[in-house]
Each structure stands twice: as structure tokens, then as C-alpha cells.
Length: 272
Length: 272
Image 1 (tube, rainbow over the protein chains, first blue to last red):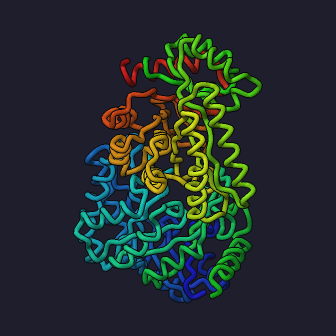
Image 2 (image 1 turned 180 degrees about the horizontal axis):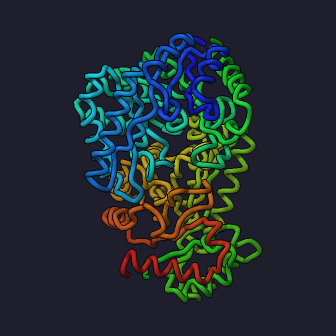
Image 3 (image 1 turned 60 degrees about the vertical axis):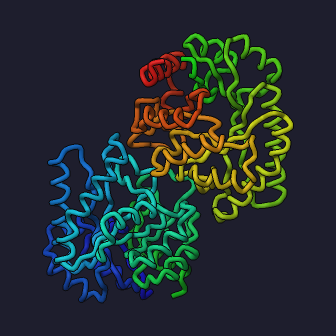
């Protein structure tokens, strides 16, 4: 399980302190911290607690949401991302994942312009803090309100437009990109460009009954995670495979049993 | 309203005979017939009834669903498409819209291969019947079970792979492709290649509460239909703008009031 990471949001009902106990019991070696899991905690202390638990912090979720209807709103977004970078640095997260954002009804081209501008505005601070940034393309069903960046191709274009800074890359989330006919080549390109910063896994259920919180555990859906993982490995990625599942169904049950199921599913998938 | 077409599925609770009365009252000049609306009717008689109502048949919905796990299943799909072509000919529909299909869990590359093969198998019959075919890329949220073709780029590739037959083109449905960063150029390409066969309109609601039946009336959502319609017109398309709305909400109400709302929304959008 040496590459297994779990997001705190995956076991949302568990407070961080319980995640730090329960994750390692299943062999989890990486943890991605969501900002809400850190609320009311001292990030420097959490950094030590994670290390004491025998895990490493893989990334901080999440920054982004750059587009806004007003200049004030866009300034607030930049400030929020600066806080996320500072928090990542304090908690020992080498990476901040960016859900880029969108404003319902605002032209996508304008949102995309604002996203590139916002990322450009926070890159120097990320660089200074030694924190990398990863653009996470989201499934096109979120294009109106969560991410005007829907494909890896677009994420590459933003990296290119900003001059291919070393600290800026892409988070590949299987849930968002599995349908993309260009996926294999875009992952390979990310490898060649040094942009493959994160790999998130879960599954797509059919039927999907809720656009947000009906993700499946690996094996519950249609995504060919073995093939996609081969593409990611072939691109030179050696980091953690991060289990990120939003599921009202799983959240309603016992989180320890859920973690058992995650570990079993991961072990079957990767024979690690 | 000279370019306004309504799909029979849009007013699903209305029997065809009532559509033929109610549509023209609102100035609707085109009708797209769904096969279920024709059940138990003589297509040659319907053809005359549509003409008597002062409308033209714009297309027949729908063929497609070519992929299947077995060769028998794929043969059945081809036979079903041959029946659709025959029905289109009999009812006076110049076009059959193809929802290409997918098999849950089957690799998308395999489904895409089966789609190209299936279309290739029915093209001669369509050609002989004087009926055109249109590949309708569906939103990526349907990639596992309804269409392994998610983008116009993919639809173009299938047309190319089959040798760009004159009778094969693309149906652009705003609901499925509005998020696509390549949309403008792919529509223009469809114009240049003579492949722009149909244009469907409705709206994307935020939040969308159901993946299938929560489409919005034009104006209820985020899609910039004016801009997209300009692109479609600039590509040389002069056909009907087809209102295709799946909505449990609208279907639960009075269908005459719904038709009034469609006509008003269309008039506001296009000032026709």
C-alpha cells in the first residue's frame, strides 16, 4: 500500500484526529488534507501528528475558484489562494490542488481568462513557499459553477500560456477525465512536460443519481483504473494514488468499514 | 418563428395528434418525431397529417445504440437502425438522429469502434432511402451508458474514418456540447465539411438535479444560445432550431402552457 493516499473528505464524518489513527491501520501512507479538516487546528502541530502517524501529507485541497463577477471578488479569490499556499507550507503539503472555478452564466471564455490571471497572480507566492500548484480539470457537468477547465488539454494550455512554470502542473482525477478520448496522450504529455502532479481515483457509477455526491468506490463503476494507472505510471508518475470519494451513501455508513473497503479495493486493483 | 421546430418528446404527455394541433398554433413550423410518438400510427398517414398541419418533418429520433457486448446484440442494433431509416423514409423525415450508444463498463475505445462499424453498416440503406444520418455527440456524463461519442471532434473523426459520406453528418445539441472549449471551431469545421445536419436547443440548469430529465427551457440556464446560434448560422446552417427538452418539471405541468413558454422564449432569443 506504499502509494495509497486517502483524502480527509473521503471519510468526511471522521474528525482529523480519527483519520490519523484509522488511515495507518489500513496501511495508508499518504493523506490529503482538506481545509475544513484543519479548521480549529494548528497546522504546525498537524504536520507533526501526520508524521507521527507514519504518513506524509500529499496535498492540500483546495485552492482555486478564481473567477468572479467583480474585480473585488477576484481579489478575494487571490487572497484566499495565498492563504491556502501559506497553510500548505505550514502543514507540510508540497502541493495545493486547484478547482479552478466558474461563475454561473458568465461566458466560459471569460472565466478561463480569469483563471489564468488568478493562477498567474499566486504563482510567485507558491514558488517562494516551495509549494506546487495543480490545475484539476473537472468533469464537464461542473463547467457552469465549479470549473471552466474541463479537460487536460485546457489545463496544458493554461500552463503553456503562463510560460510553463516548474511549480504549475495538473491533477488527474479519474472521475473527471475518464471519458476523454484524448486522455492517454494528454497524460503522456503531462509526463513529458513535468506536469503530472497528482492522481486521484474513485469510480463512476451508472446510473449516477447525484451530480456531486454519488461517486463510487474503485470497482463500483465503469472506470478502467488499471489502464489509466498504467498510463500515469508510464508517464513517470511515482507519487501517491489518492482516493477521493464524495458519497452520501458511504458517508452514511460506518467509516471504519468504508476504510476497510477502500484498502481491499486498492489492494485488489494494484496488488501492492 | 420560421425556423422553430419542437420535438414530440418535449411535450411527452401530448399524443401526436395533439402535437399536430398545438404546435402550429404557436407558429411552430417543424416537428421532430420520436419513434414512440409514432407507435400504433401509419407513418404514411402521419406524413400527410404533418403537411396538413402546415409543418415539415425535420428529423426522426432516434437511431444509434450500436455497441453491444455480443455480435448478436450488434446485429440487432443494425437491424433496428435499418427499421428507423425505413420509418424515416415512410414518414417523410430527411434525417435520422443517432444517439450512438455505449455498453456500461465496456472500454470506450471498443464502443467507439463498434459505433463506426454500425454506422458503416447502415449507411448504404440510408443512402438508398434518401435519408441522412446525424451523429449526436452526447454530454460526457452519458459516456458510460448512452454515447461513447462525447465531442464534435470525435463525431468528425468517425465521419472521416468512414470516408466522409455525403449523407453522414453531426447533430449539434447545445445541452451536450456547450462546455466544449473547441465548440466554435468544430461547428465551423462541420459547416465547411457539409456535416452540420441539425441544431438542438434547450438550457443547462444549475444546479442540475437529475442527469436525464432536468433540462431547462431556453433562458432557464447558462447556455449562451445566441452566441452558439451565431456560430451555427455562420457555418451556413439554415435549418430548423429544434427545441428538445427532457424535463420532469415541465412534463408535470400543462403542456399548452409549456408550448406558450417555448414560443415566447424562442421569440425573445431570435426576434424572429
